[in-house]
Image 1 (cartoon, helix red, strand yellow):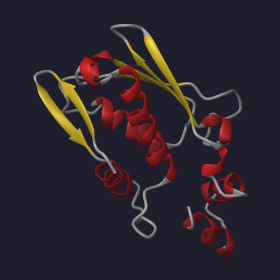
Image 2 (image 1 turned 90 degrees about the vertical axis):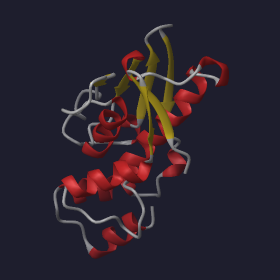
Image 3 (image 1 turned 90 degrees about the horizontal axis):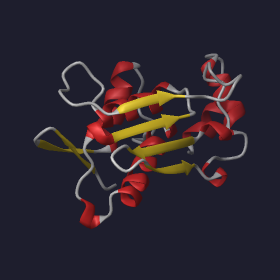
Length: 166
């Protein structure tokens, strides 16, 4: 998968989904299923790729962290971690974008559904925004029921098999 190139101060950084997923798995003591990233990380990464391609066209240069704002309705840790990593919101970063989590009422505690997979990327210098909504066909039937069980740490063997196919 294509990397994201982003500016921070005087330097450019190339970010891959693999490095974000490795960080996510490491911090949450998880293993990647068959080498695949979690859907929260991958959907967030792809949303930024798409939004950058629309808001910063080829002749507009490379996005700089300080001119980016991302609003997400997905309270999942993997998604938040992906956005924060891309925006440089970490202790060692000298430049930072802006991130805001705004889940719909009742969906604040990882009680996510398809309506949470909406991300808006804003180019602050022009105030242009690009909303990204993940298509429902990305998720297999019953995905959100399985995710709810997984969050409670009691999925059945059948449930685990369904999430591994994503």
